[in-house]
Every structure is written in C-alpha cells, then in structure tokens.
Amino acid sequence: MEKGYLVLNKRASVSRPGKSRDDDYDVLADGVAVGRIFKVRLGGRTPWVWTLAFGHHEGRTPTHGYAESCEAAMAAFAKSWRRA
Image 1 (cartoon, one colour):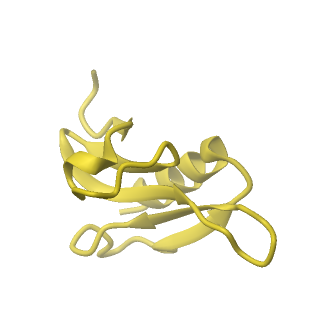
Image 2 (spheres, rainbow, N blue to C red; image 1 turned 90 degrees about the vertical axis):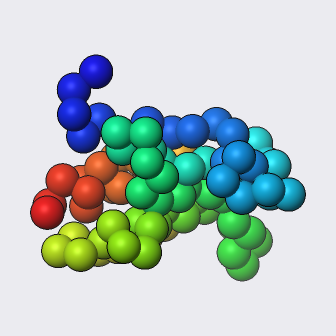
C-alpha cells in the first residue's frame, strides 16, 4: 500500500467507545485516524459529513463538508487531504 493511502475504518467504535454505528467511520492515513465520515439527519435529509481531525487540517481547505453518499464524502475528504 502506498504511503498516504486513505482507508475507511469500519469500526469507528474503537477510537470512540460507545459510538458503534454502521454509518460512522474513522478515516485512517498510515494507520492514524486523521478524520471522520458519518451520516447525519439534517432537515429531513440524511447527508454524509466529512471532517478532518483537529491537528491534521493545517494547510488544507476545506476542512469539512457534506455529501450525498459515503463515496462522495470520501472523495471530497481525499481532495482536501491531498492539498497540503
């Protein structure tokens, strides 16, 4: 696997005990949690939110956003991540 490769960790509950949900993921880079992707309820819709973790956003913009699917959220996360 190439360095800097981003991976969705399907067990977000490992880093956030008590938060076990099928629609809540950690984003890992080189084995370190650098962000999160999760589904929210917002005005009758259920978009996905992506966010860079504090300490991993320096030089990257935007640092968070909304997407209509988990795949679109991951693509937006990756685009922001690679801007640094």
